[in-house]
Image (tube, rainbow, N blue to C red; front, side):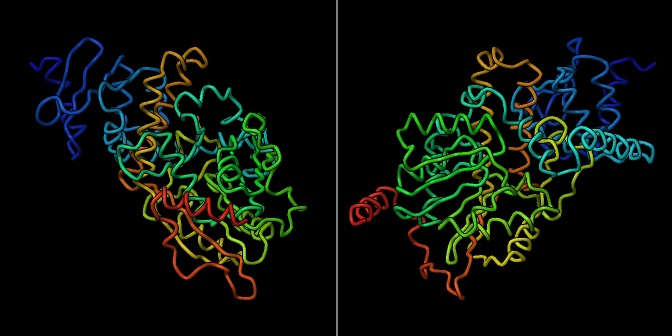
Length: 430
């Protein structure tokens, strides 16, 4: 007669029969361990209750797997980011008609609930509620793992050995160089976060910088940082929706938007680009920095990120971004993929979350901490395997056919020290 361990081993072998990723181990609540592949692999999947084993066997979606991790029914010992190869495999297992129908119904129940509470998807009231859900928490929670720049977007690494703060400063400067900011220009940052780019542009490039954000907490922190830096004569940040900026008509020489278009939604992309086009002076430049999904990747009906991190968040494709930008009369001047840079950034954030675990648990419940750990690690895995990417797109509002841009872009990637010398000369002449 087949023993319990033999039967369990046979079931796990059948469950992972189609898995082709790196080796790993599974350890049960009673200490029994099963190995897939040679040796123990890079990580161990801990199943802390019989319910966890049931979740795996059902081939459930990412929400159920994510909730099991958040509630500590399952855990990972070892490389959390690499372990997402198992999650990808399990969530793509074939499902029966009944399970697919159940997933569809659950997704629509959540959507209906949000409609009653906050209005239609991507209405002004609902977008404001979604941003508040994510960002209106104490800034110290973010500072512990984002670093001193408080830049909550992809950093720019000249080397894989760069420290996070250094790489974020390099990203802020790369954006300013791509926009070719010059002293006394008027610069707008749409979705400015805690004001990192506004501060950098004003301090290093002596522009008149203005930022808008839907988060009251971010606007408050950004203005505190501006006062502390003594830059109130050059910087301003306000709590404002880009759809409520009729007075911005052709007010700005240069505009950026970093990590903002992910929140806009596909139906509103034409409205978003048309608004930015109106804000920009003829001959002005706009840099849009945003995450997109690979055109061949499918969008899950039930998303862990939508449930627990970014309500109403839906990634669009690069093609959809370009189409909306060109439809708003922008000319595309440059497109750069920084996918590998975002994986490196997220790995730094995961390290920061783990390193500062005890301090963070003094600020938030452990479930909140585990949501963020899972979100950042899962995002790193998605960038690594190419499911998602991040693009910087440089766009121009033409002035009677003129972009007012130089013929070449060598100055974007010059040596940092050389560029700062050129910048100092320019400011001296200004």
